[in-house]
Length: 185
Image 1 (cartoon, rainbow, N blue to C red):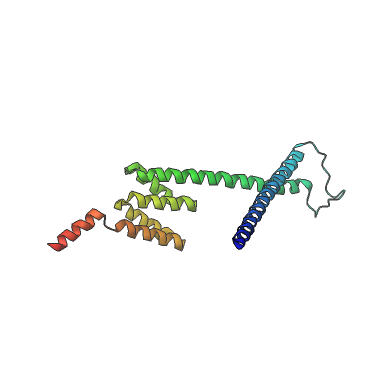
Image 2 (cartoon, one colour; image 1 turned 180 degrees about the horizontal axis):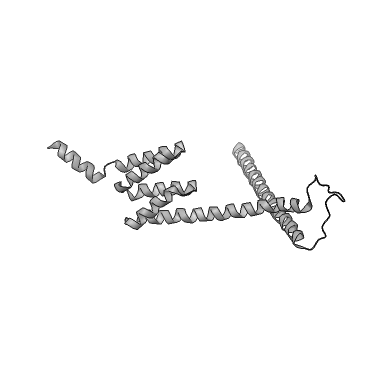
């Protein structure tokens, strides 16, 4: 009985230490992210104030060194890039959700909207459009998919499109049963 208690206590302590380490890493990451965000904000705020300009060639900055304004722009640029990337990610997610909804419909407008997204610049949106094209299971999309496959340069995407074409070509259960009945006769 005693070894069981010791093992339970040991594993409980091990789980507790792992959870504490995970929590500390998570809090440290969040704190670091906040500090970087605050630093970028303070740099942006200092850029907005009317600070006197140091003329080139005087003081600590020569013509060959970076000016404070260039340094501020270099720090602010990643924030703008991150904001643009986040906005693009949200737009891509919205498109993916729209494609999932359209795949449930079996009408012409939904099919053309799905096929239009197969040429989207975002890989995630193209993957979702291909998945939606498979879900609508309409053989009339096969020529369009074949055309897209011929113009696709990425080998993996081309293989995925060709696999989708082969899947859509498969007979439905009803067609399969009809074929089996004809073979039996």
